[in-house]
Image 1 (cartoon, one colour):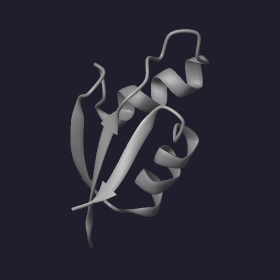
Image 2 (image 1 turned 90 degrees about the vertical axis):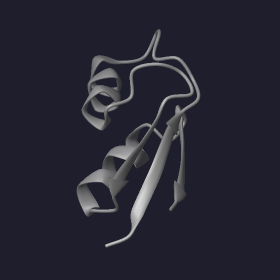
Image 3 (image 1 turned 60 degrees about the horizontal axis):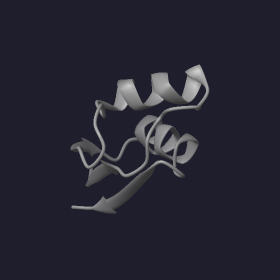
Image 4 (image 1 turned 135 degrees about the horizontal axis):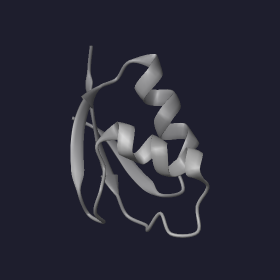
Length: 59
């Protein structure tokens, strides 16, 4: 599988608990923090739920 780099670019303040939990599950805590995950359907779905808070790019 390919890898995907996810970078948090906006704050989670005033977001729903579900969105905050999704960011935490992805491993994103601070703004401009990046993580690399395999591009599984589960990860892609999580990124789509918080796509207004993150930037994703193929690695």
